Image (cartoon, rainbow, N blue to C red; front, side, top):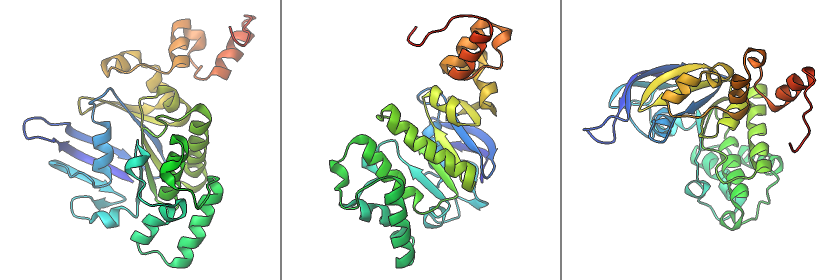
Length: 273
C-alpha cells in the first residue's frame, strides 16, 4: 500500500528532514509512526499522500508514484485526518462538509446522499450543525466522517486524539480499528501518545532525525528500552512497568494483564491504589 524507496526530503537545501528512508506498509496493516518532535513523522505522512514531493528516491501509494500521479488521483486512495480539524473543515453545515470530498471527486449524487446519511448516523452528527460552533471532539468527528465517507484504502491519522477526552478518543479509535479489521483499510497513525500506540497499532516505525531506527511489532518495540531512549521516546506505562518487574512480566502489555499477573502471585491490588 505504501512504499518508500531511498526517500530524502528537505524543506531547505541545507538541511534534510528525511534521509534515505525505505520501508513498506502492506494493505490492511495498522502502523504507528513514533519519534520526538522534529523526527520527521508529519513530513512522512505528507510525502505519502503527495502533499510533499521527495527530493530524492520515490514514494509509491497503492502502486502509484506520487511524483508522477496527480494529487486528485492519489486522494481517491488516501484519506488524511489533520491534527487540527479547523484546518480541514471548510463548509457551513455538517452535511455539506461530509459531502465535500465526494463532490470534489465527482461522485454520483445518489452515492453522495447515501454515504453522507450513513456517516451522519455512524458518528451521531446533526446534518444542520454549523461545524465551527461545535466542541473540539465533535469537530474531529465531523472531519473524520468526511474523510471516511469516501471509503479510502488508506487512512492517515496525524495526532488524531489531540485535545480529545478519553471517551471521544476511544470512540474514534475503536471505529477506526473496526474499519481496519473488518474492511481491511490500511491505517498509518502519527502519534506522541504511547498509550494510544500500545492499545491500537500492531506495528511501529521508530524515527529519529529523519532516520528509521526501528521497525517491528508494537509489543516488541515497546519493550526495547535502548531503542526508545535513543529515539527520545518514553514507552507506554504498562510495558515499562513490566520491564522493571523482571522476566515474570515479560509478556504483560495491558492493565488487565498486569492485574491478572499480580493476582496470580497473591499480591493484593485494589482499584485506586
